Length: 210
Image 1 (cartoon, rainbow, N blue to C red):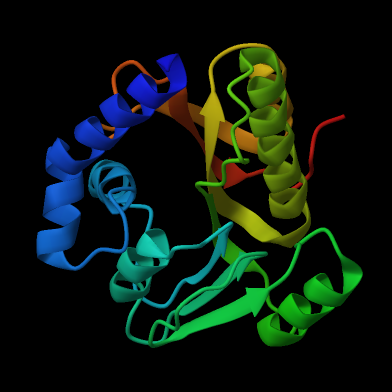
Image 2 (cartoon, rainbow, N blue to C red; image 1 turned 180 degrees about the vertical axis):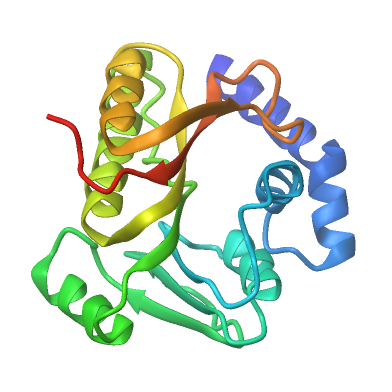
């Protein structure tokens, strides 16, 4: 009964959420678009001609926004294990980016170049067990940092979703070894009661610190 009530409450909150309503009205695939829009507006992350990677891209609202901002001549690679409805100009690769076959496909698409920006709004399937969910979110953030360390050009940036809690400070420290500047951003579209926040690593170091 309690779970049924909480599901009803979530559904009510979702359908009355102004960002959900705006996303539908403006044609975004999810309310998450507004998180990236706000951060990009403030930080000027996306510029024409950039090569961008969107990890865990489905359903695709970040890719929708980013591809508009990097035209003309920008390239966007969207990776996800889930299906992804095509977006004009977006190179979608379905699979786990930790797997060699997926990485080889991605690297072939890059054609020897490196990325200017890595984006990740990835979240695991939530269990409702706080410690478990926190560990899963932080693991995805660590994987994103590993990916960015390998595929970002020097001076490139990374934006990743995290939850504040266990492992958060350790991840920030790990990012500091890779990027010259670390910023914390909580856009208005992130629900206030949520531990969700975003870490922005700017200016990837020429040499990663030990």
